[in-house]
Length: 120
Image 1 (cartoon, rainbow, N blue to C red):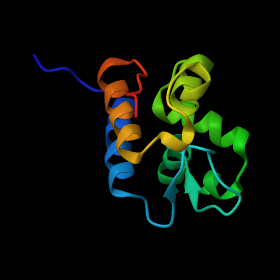
Image 2 (image 1 turned 180 degrees about the horizontal axis):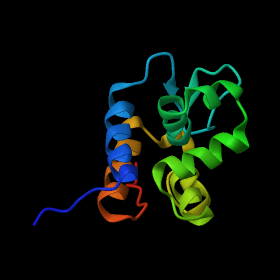
Image 3 (image 1 turned 45 degrees about the vertical axis):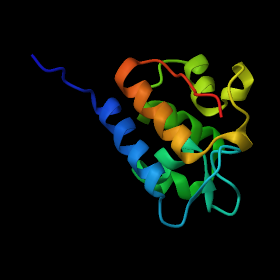
């Protein structure tokens, strides 16, 4: 019997592919959900830019963070912190995170429900 994936799991897997390939007009950068210029974003920013583009245009960082948590199925603030700010829980620093690392983390989360970052 095959396992069914949730909408959030499928979204994480698709987002991993998008981050690997790049999102037109948005540079991957784990420093912030959305830079004021609107051209750089972390995992959460990429999720909102892809799946809630109207909200993405507002640059409301609190709303973007909340929406990113919902879109990816992150269960609480601790899990969101591990995904969006791994350096605060002993994970890699923002400047060391590559798109491939972020994509690997999203894929692992989609398949296991655990946020686990590889060391750079």
